[in-house]
Picture 1 (cartoon, rainbow, N blue to C red):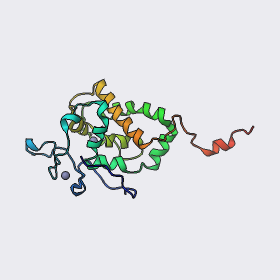
Picture 2 (picture 1 turned 120 degrees about the vertical axis):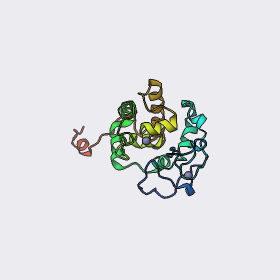
Picture 3 (picture 1 turned 135 degrees about the horizontal axis):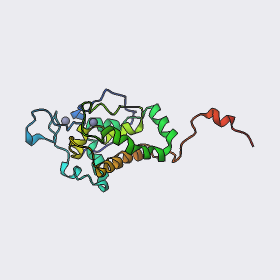
Picture 4 (picture 1 turned 180 degrees about the horizontal axis):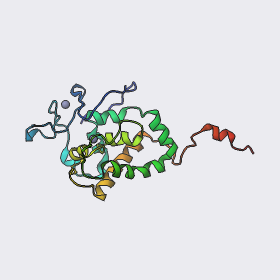
Length: 201
Ligand SMILES: [Zn+2]
Ligand SMILES: [Zn+2]
């Protein structure tokens, strides 16, 4: 397992896709390549690095989340989404909602984006910015049914079960806890103007 050292400088926004790799920096992609021999399934599609304990990750054990998160960070897209600064829109929305509402909205978002069996537009349903939950979904491989399949061993041809949805929800919330630890539980007042106009006592 690669250790996940924080970078000193802010990470630049890159054009990172699901299949991006930078193998020299130990950032891989474990999505199976077409025609890849069976014995190489689960290794990096570019360099065949064999880094993931799939048997353990595929258990979907919510109490083993730390291990799963560390495994996910070996993949370039996950690592990137884990370390990039959230954009201002995403931050503003999170603060406007507050922790409680934001966390409560996770399951609705998961149902609408990955709740159903894999569709024709799978892979495009989760934007790369604009909402903290989108970042969380990419970082935890709950962004689309394809990622959900190879990372979490959930078949693509059927709707998610309640247990699977709950597991995904825990992953997303784990990310949000990690990235937005200081988020107020309640919505933060959005417009300073409103405050100013409130009556003085
Ligand atoms: Zn690689
Ligand atoms: Zn995906």
